[in-house]
Image 1 (spheres, rainbow, N blue to C red):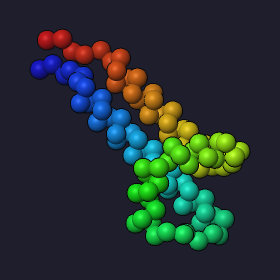
Image 2 (cartoon, rainbow, N blue to C red; image 1 turned 30 degrees about the horizontal axis):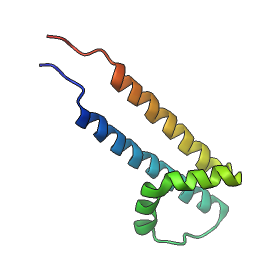
Image 3 (cartoon, rainbow, N blue to C red; image 1 turned 30 degrees about the vertical axis):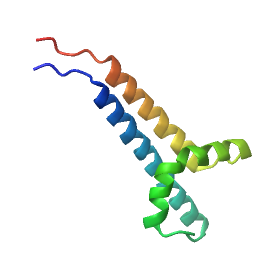
Image 4 (cartoon, helix red, strand yellow; image 1 turned 60 degrees about the vertical axis):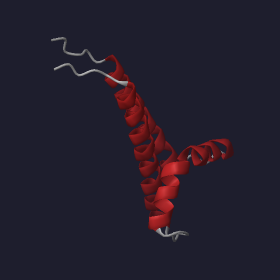
Length: 97
């Protein structure tokens, strides 16, 4: 059976990668604030989904304002890993049977 790369698989990968990068952004932000001794403004039940959706705008704001902390670099690492996995998925040789 051939395993073909379809448009749906690519879109599904992009959506899952986007949400997982947002999860990394959110969890490292929570850990960073916990280490600094600051409290959470929103409950994690509200804050994590909001961070999972809006992380690109927060990354842009951190970049423009020069706030380079562990949250910024861990999210960049997650983006790099997702990009590498995406290219592996695209250019992997398929079994031709």
